[in-house]
Length: 238
Image (spheres, helix red, strand yellow):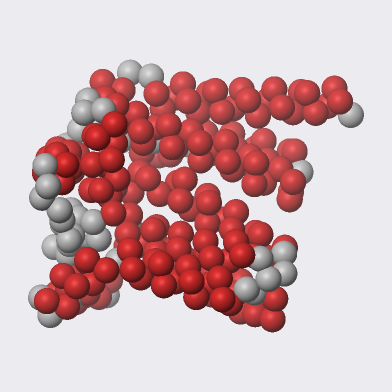
């Protein structure tokens, strides 16, 4: 058993190292386009005292919530270099890969954990977006955290971890509005565990999440909820 565990640990460590190698090498060749330049400019503006109520404008014309530009502002506050900002995405992407193994291993066994983590570590799109300073590229660490919180709510009665479910959902939504689809698995789980969920924690998490959207909601209230209309119109397709 100890020998088996040592080989398993070595395999997991090798996968995480591979994920880091794929995401952190030659970051000078990583994509850098208009969105990245605008985000860095806004980040510097924020550090100069120009606080924002909205984030970048999406391709649909709707303004995103401002969470992303404040994350970039925090990264720029630590270090102003472009490569460092891109590296922050890569490091969080590697942590998401490692966290995936930690979540899956005790629930589904070593084989499933290693295969899942290996696929996540080497999937071409996961690698590409793990080397890219883009709003959506902060999603993996958030959604993996959300997955963990959903498992905990499924396994434990009245757990306070339930607070993280609505909170991480709102954070994911702020990073990419397509995350609204996560309401389906979240709603299904909460309905299934309705008698054993710590609803007080869920409400507190939801309130904190809504408060984090405060400036964006206030901006939309002032402008007739224009962003909401654009999101709905584009969601219907053409």
